[in-house]
Length: 513
Image (cartoon, rainbow, N blue to C red; front, side, top):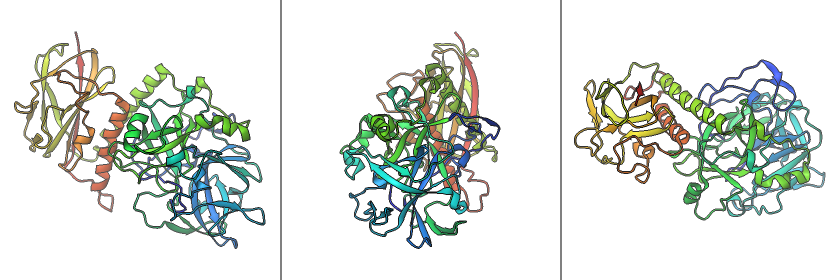
């Protein structure tokens, strides 16, 4: 469950935003859609990218103290969309969160009497002033939600405001035609919740109101996560209600996720102009950022009729604005290029550059067989990734023929020919498509989870050619997330140069007929 009072982003994505005035995607004068400078990593998000995001908080009767509760989005001038368990949660005795209406007509926390309020227009909760706070007039919880999102689904609710919001609104995906694909899709999520699963308590500060406030995170955080097919998600949560009403997202190795306190917050996709539209909301997950335990999100399109029952003028994203096949291919290529650039940036501050060359016939021709010569300034385990001319991605080393219990290691400043004579692979065969490709080489510490990036044997069949791995976008995001996550672990508290037991190199090549 991700909606407790003390519950957001386990590790977040740093972004920068263009501020040129333009007519934005919501039909109002505003800022241009932001451009991301990183694919994985970073911590701070800016409100310009999330103008529709709200914070739900609980405030004491004497208005002296408050605490963060959940997230949400404003979808009409007087309506906020959030998770059902932010208002009703009877499944966890530790957090008996049940919002009720008191004798004064206010919606309050049943156990504490703290009033539920909506905060909008800030990305740092210290800056909350009276004009950022909206009072609650009514709440609506989905009829089929019974207090346990993993058991019943339909984890969705609406909050009606006493006074209208005049700023920008979220656009929603209200049909399957505008929903994200189960793979090849990069999603973003944001909130003010926990930064790690084991976080004890939160940050205490005083707002501008003034109000003594507790929150898991004082500032808004965001992260990018890849979509996960429902079949794979159900394998991780065999007894849970995961189907057409859910979206799953996360990394195979964990490390980046929504977390406690993010509940009800938006899961978004970028449209053809780079503007966000909401496809899901944070619902639940086992822990935060754990390997193969993905985040589960309520799929908004499946609840479209229920939403329109109360909010008939909700803004739906147009099909023409969503990424189509050609645009999706371009977006996938752009994301892979950005990931490679980020790897280059991650290693820019060190001189640990790998020398990589192809050994074989002078002309790289389809059908010819080759080996790679790799030399690294540091010792460690080698990961070799091929990105072909069609942007199919294949981890060619280590592969299913190598014994991962006795992996091939590189010695410092000593050339190594890959594949070696004893690792089960004779050579790498150049295959179509013809054109320019790239080979990426990483030297990583022994502790790096190479096996979790490796394709399964049913994908890497007994062939000596370069066979692409399905879901290349998800694959490269997973590899990049592991690298950035591991590099973060090796940074010292003063932010000095990261550990020197890593190396990286890129080889551009071209295959001809």
